[in-house]
Length: 326
Image (cartoon, rainbow, N blue to C red; front, side, top):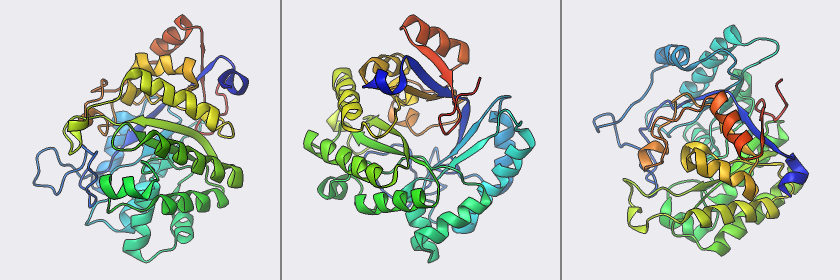
């Protein structure tokens, strides 16, 4: 199935992340990233005036995607998130070239849900206003496991699975392609995983708006579920294989290497995955804080090309919409 859809390609892009803050109103049990407030060790929150200097540090020539996702800050309103997009869009417009436009991928459905609820906006109105500010595509975070019983246990104050699906449905209707995720290996059952995949499959049949699906392994360091430990590499790879077979209508399966580590992510290419994500440039802490192997995630093009070739694959650079960049 993987070869029929993507041949021997291992897709990647040149990107970096902006994580505006880790101060968060939600208290998800699996999260090692969040902080209660600015007084806690390790807390951060970027002001609008800090966004451009951060971009200048992380941008490298040829970058084609800036990925913006973080926490739901209890003291920031919709204007803050819109201004971040506007600032990044101005920066990107100054750096991009006709051959390498820079795409803004921003805000999970959970962040969109909170923007709507805290600011009295409909999902459609919120997304339209973010589009005007520069939003072009959305990441797939916050899906976790859709099963209501599981969500009540691990993220009880976060939007429901149905709400997550509805936000992505609205995005697709507005011409905003998105990704989808599943956080697995904690308290959920394998049946819960299958139900999650089938819900994504059904929405894709309806809208065709998902570009990629990303299975995310629960990492067990420094969170309230650490006692559970982590599932084996074999369980991870089998989950990729089942996802590839179940989601034959979603064109790409991403092995997110900052979470899996480079070697396991590359191994996943033989188990259904076809995309490694991007170069990252040491710009994300979400999985590093939870104990991921890659504590300062950066992947060079030469390293990726060599690893892919050694494994019998061909590394192919893409933009955010899986168009080949030569």
